[in-house]
Picture 1 (tube, rainbow, N blue to C red):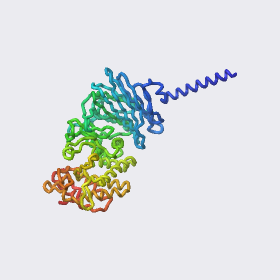
Picture 2: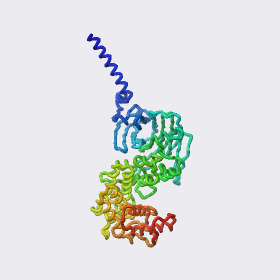
Picture 3: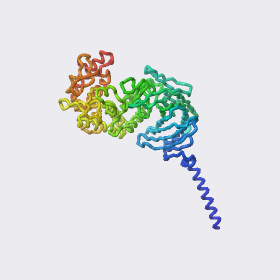
Picture 4: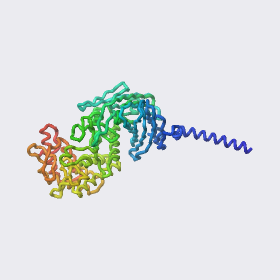
Length: 557
């Protein structure tokens, strides 16, 4: 009797173990046991979770209570592949990031390529996937990456539409619907329709192939790239073939959404796509936009070098004018850019792209790591915008750091004091060389005043508005110095000896005037007579030069 009972217990235990084993294999918890020892998965959670295999991994997450999406990434046509690390990088309400690091050794190569796949899961359900492939060797090699995206809910009867678009040298954009699923090194928007309604959409970037140069520049180099996509039922796949030359880095990315990423055939959308420029004068990456240096006077620049534009000026304009809720791209790009600011802010609380301006070096002896009040305050204004629109607390924290830095510049003497208890903050602050006092330009000052006013309004902290008032007092106290009676335009800047120099920007300063004046008209009752006189003087010059057609400020000679 005892033997029979023991056999029954043993049989039950075996069955239970088998059921448990099948369950665990099905849900992916035995990936580590199923693969060779060099592969592992360090991130496992209910949703999302990452499973690894001998050629790549899958990233799975729920996008509704009853449906989930899987994105499978794999390397093809290689002799060996090894995942070295899987990490959860960030977990915020508005963005979560995971990274998978790997090595892939191409055929005929003794040395591996080093790769990182970054995956951002945005709060709107969109996913941003970024590839980064580094070749430390001397010889270039091809690599083939495949992404397979499938949903748990089948949606039969779908029609797939391809819209490759390219940027011409004159700044225009050509968008053309194509029957071919094969594209070269260009942007491509793919939309999947069911009965004329979008159920999925994908945006693929061009291939950014570059080498890292000294002094904050990267130099783009041509290299082979092509992609081919497929759609069947609820599965979308794309295969990208690229070559990474020796001592170069290759990057590409895509966005996957269950909503229209863009209204690609809309004239308005095509207008902002042309302005943004993803593949000519600008390149969008996980760090936001890189701008072509265009012989702007940077040390070491060539016709193919780019620098990181941490000002996020373009992203702020995109959100100001084109975020209408009918497409997810403006939101997605802005969230990715905000996250880049969070990650790349230095220990002092500001941003620098490490470029060296030949003009600043010659005039003041400044090299890199300086605080640029225009770029940093533009980034602060973008952060305020993201806080005001979406309630992101980290964005407000970023902006407050900039506000506190501006106020600290007063205490540390990085200003040109004026009468009427005013001051002009210097354009460039070099913490490592505090004795250097640069000029103060009008566009920087107007931008700083607006930023501090906005920050005070959103935080209800009066100290920021008081600092803005002192900047405005400085502008008013130096009013007569800004007029260039000879050119009938405004002067660009004033130095510590109250001498003016250089020609003002055609439109930048004018738009800064408009924004600050409009803020005061809406929120304060302060005297604007000096600001209006200066802005009108600029407007008159713009009208005479046919740079604007419509006056927006009362005419004053």
